[in-house]
Amino acid sequence: MNRQKKLQQLFKEKSRKANAKLAPKSNKPKYISKADRLKMEAEASQEPSLSTEE
Figure 1 (cartoon, rainbow, N blue to C red):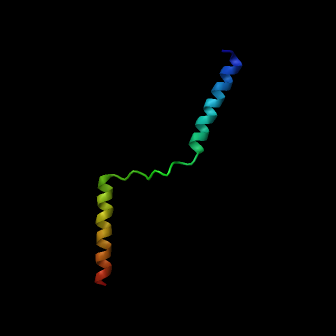
Figure 2: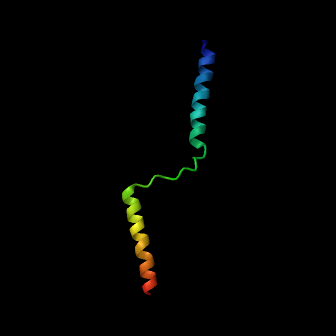
Figure 3: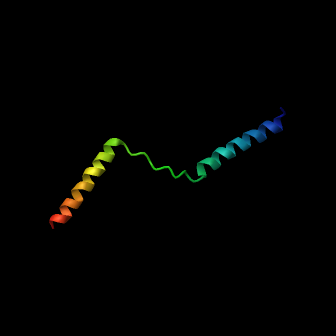
């Protein structure tokens, strides 16, 4: 493989990686730990009970 081709390959590889970082992320939801989910559920269950008492 000659030098020119190697340089072109390296340039393409770097540009692909850079474009991949800039590309929009997938629609996959962000991971929420089990402890955080339980905490959010507890907060959600407390809010309606407070609003019904008023």
